[in-house]
Image (cartoon, helix red, strand yellow):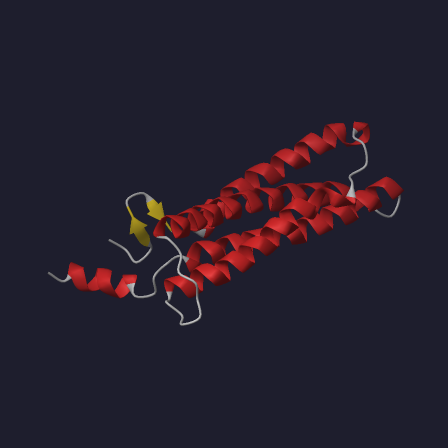
Length: 164
């Protein structure tokens, strides 16, 4: 059993698990935009707000979960099921965030050649850049929340039990 395993079926998110949706969605968005960008309405600035709010909430939750797991003296206790749900939320948010990073990159790669010539492309590239930053923050928050639920002594206990 490796140090990355948490239990039956739950492992820490690896970078390869994030790379697959990033690349697949990024290429798909790029190809679709090559053929249909001119028929789409302009992107709106608030499109990234929900992801940004979720990232902030997960950063806050990660701090609280980490304190509860590490039994910090000022931390409010949390039920184990709540911590497990936070870990699952973090894992899923990291995957969704990676997919949105891919979509934003696909959008930016498609629009950057036209930014200086087409005002709509410049506007949409700005929205895409904000979306890229916010979705990258969601990936970071998700990974942080996922790892916050790990007991720091669990790896040592697991290694100790494998010796026998």
